[in-house]
Image 1 (spheres, rainbow over the protein chains, first blue to last red):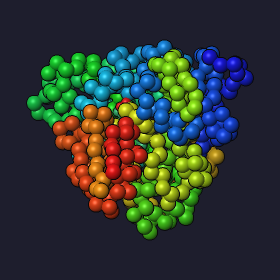
Image 2 (cartoon, each protein chain N blue to C red):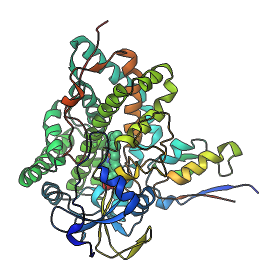
Image 3 (tube, rainbow over the protein chains, first blue to last red):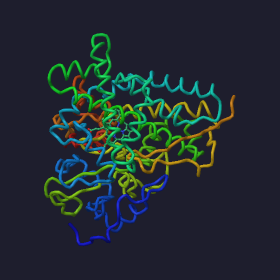
Image 4 (cartoon, helix red, strand yellow):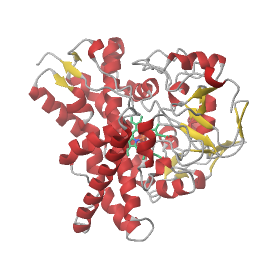
Length: 407
Length: 66
Ligand code: HEM
């Protein structure tokens, strides 16, 4: 595919705790569309410019389906996991199949609907903080807060018992682990589907008495013959994982970045009107979906002055796009006052995050009160001891032990 | 000449960017969650917000023409 051959850099490159691999910055300058060697020995093109990344992600001639010839393989565990998904969830499908499934859910996640849930979410935040306060310092804010909030919110929306959280949180972690034994990654997917299929069976028994997203899917889509039970299970699987594993890491990384920038934390306490921008900046700065997005050209396409050929694998890195200095000046600076609008932390194109209104309301609810309740919240361990989930498809931290002076 | 906002609803994926950016101009249809224009000739004061909505729409289905 190229004459650069084996001299090309290898993917993935080593990232830093708070920024994508430094190579992205150099490449954006010298070779913004450059060949890279993927772990399976094939080559793909790495894209690091904001405009090019947006172009690829929003061009229907680039497929996101791992079954398309030339799809870039980021790790053996990842491909095993993707291959074990049967049927595939719509995040892996291209239009028109993708459109059909996504449209069955868009009304569930519209702004007005999620906005109406804000008081409930804010109340849940307060309850979790009450529990933390009662427990006393130090507390792992990942387990007891960052993960607890989105898990309970998405469980409620879907109608998945919160009491099963350990089971599905563990499977989700395994599914997203790029360095796991491939057989285990595949097994986690299958276990998760089995668990959800069983739950589906339970829902059938109470179908007239409950009103949750799973029940609505059964009544309005499966019973009407539009989709199969397996299709519904695949959708629920996607929503459950995407609904908790992402937001939890964003909440914790958001807390951590404010602790590291105390002046900005204080500004936020004094002026709550900064919250919405602060949340967008967190999404831009951390871009936790640091492996998005693998795509493959299904036709000959020109992007950014480069001619892609049918079957070319492309890594259109949203993490690199969000650090493009031509769009975000001094991109490596965390600055809650900057205009980070237009960031691609939720992706771009038809797959742009369906749950973004929900993720935003959850994050906004957190940052509205957390530092009001715990003004001297601080790390309970040295920063060096915080473990980052570098090997996960969704970047984040393994734990966030925090302490404070009890009132 | 007044500037007119139009959308190609068939392209919309319901990401809600426009509703977040320019809530006085865009809304989401109750049944499908897809974009609807509630003010197709918005006042000057809304023009920046509409331009932002055009730029941030992930599927580029919003148009703002002279
Ligand atoms: C801060 C938290 C979140 C971040 C950073 C995030 C990020 C993303 C990104 C980057 C994509 C696009 C992936 C691609 O193009 O391959 C995506 C898709 C998706 N997200 Fe989120 N997400 C978050 C929270 C949520 C929540 C709370 C839900 C809840 C339901 C959710 C559901 C989805 C779904 C269903 C898709 C697939 C959409 C499609 O393929 O059409 N996400 N997300």
